[in-house]
Amino acid sequence: MCVSSNALPLDQDVLLESEDAAEVEAGASAVEVRELKAGMAQHGTRLDKTLVDLVPEFSRSYLQQLLEQGAVQLNHKTATKASAKVKLADVISIEMRPTAQSQSFKPEVMALDVVYEDAYLLVVNKPAGLVVHPAPGNWQGTLLNGLLAHHAGAAMVPRAGIVHRLDKDTSGLMVVAKDRSTMDALVALIARRDVSRRYLALAHKPWKGAELQKVDAPIGRDPRNRLRMAVVDLAQHAGKEARTDITCWDTTSAHCLVHCKLHTGRTHQIRVHMLSLGHPLVADALYGGAPAGDMQRQALHAFRLSFVHPVTAEVLELAAEPPEDFLCAIEKLGLRYNPH
Image (cartoon, rainbow, N blue to C red):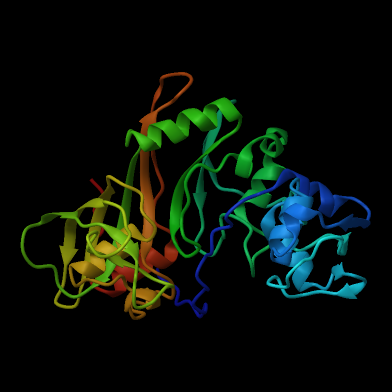
C-alpha cells in the first residue's frame, strides 16, 4: 500500500572541491594569529594570492573564507576584498579561526544502510536527501560524516574513501574504500569502466522507437545556464564524451520506466541524456521534469552495482530495491516494475 508523501523538493547537491588536512587541523585547534610581511614576490599582487603564497599549508578555499569573515588585516585594518593590492613590506595579520568548512570533517553517527562490507570496502544504499560530501549549505550530516563514524580507518583515507558520487536527490548504491590502496584500485576500476552501474528512472512522455536506445552524446556545462549540464558540441563548447544505454521497461501514454546502464560517469549524465531524448525525469525540476505520482524528488535510483573485488578478486553483484517513494510512484503512474 502506497502512502502519499508531503515532503518538499530538496536542494541540488554541490560537490565539495577539496579537503585540506591542515585546514581540518585548524578547525580543531585554538585560534592562532599570524603576522606576516609582504616581500618583493608579493609586491603588486592580489591579497588572496599573497595569502596563498605566505601560508601555503592552508587551502585557497579556507583562506578565502577567512577573508570573507573579516579575519584578515592589511596594515592593521580589516581587509575583506580578495582583489586588494599588496605592496612590499605591508603587514598582514591572519586570525586562523575555525570555519564551517574546516569543522565539517567530523564523525557523525548515523544509520547507514550497508549492503556489503569487508576489511577493504563497503557498499551503502544511500537514501534520497543525503548529501555525499560536505559543501556550502550542507556542512554536516553528510555521508562522509557518517563514514568517519562508521569505521576508524575512514579518517586516514581521502574523502573517507568515497570514489564516486550520487546527487543528493538520487538514491541507491555507492562503493566506498576503507584504505588508500583499495581506494586507488577502485578508482582505476572505474576509470577502466570495469564497474557496472545500473539505474532505474521514471520519466515523462510515452516511450517511442526501439526498446533499447544507445545514447552517445558529449556532456558539458550548459552555456545558457551554468547550474545545469547539457549535451554540447565539443567543437564549440568544453565537455566530455558520455555514453548511456537506455532500455524501456514499461510505458503508458504519459510516462515511462527505464533502465539505464552507464558507460561513463559524467555529472547528471542520465538526467541530461534522458532530456536529450525528450524524456525529462519525473520531479527533476532542474531539467524540466514535473512532480507525478507523488514523487517529490528526481526519480532516479542506482539499483545494481557489480565489479570484481580489487583485493579478493570475488565477483560482487549487489542490488538495492527502489525506495518506497519510487515504488509508489511506479504504481500510481500505472507502470509495472519487473526487475530482470
